[in-house]
Image 1 (tube, rainbow, N blue to C red):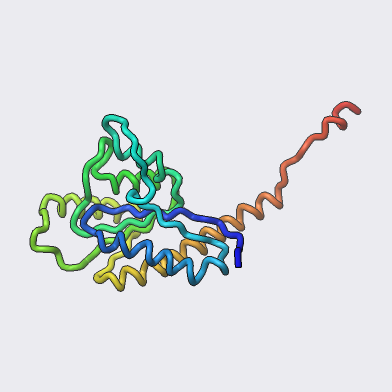
Image 2: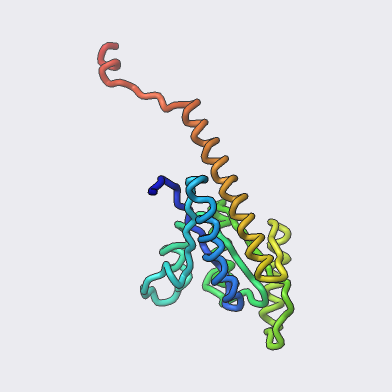
Length: 195
């Protein structure tokens, strides 16, 4: 049966070395929706560049095109990283970092996870050092999650999404309560003419 729900767009941000995580995140979101959406009146919609971007030519700033098409409209960011930071953009160290910075500047929730799985034999040391520097910087400004297996990542993400939805609902309820307590005053034009 149909039900009314608020849709929250969940941006999936990551470099190319976490393809398995990129596949798992939408599945976890769909699992969360199946269990919680009707009761919570919230539907989480996974947003990825692979599914939400469309062809556009600007000449030089591909990431800004993505930012305009779907990054800025998203409500929650889920980021996953392992051995790479990603491809640099015109503004920052990588597309993933630029998306995270967009969310920081907009004061939107960020769920960032780092894999602690064994490194592959062909790891790029320069990329790994860039990632570790970013992780150190992020650590001084926020809290991130770590996972040692895909199953652990799946479990963490499911529970963190639940916490984030509860936080969102509490904030929304608080804002609605403020509106009810402090209604906007209206002036009737006919009252003005009487004075």
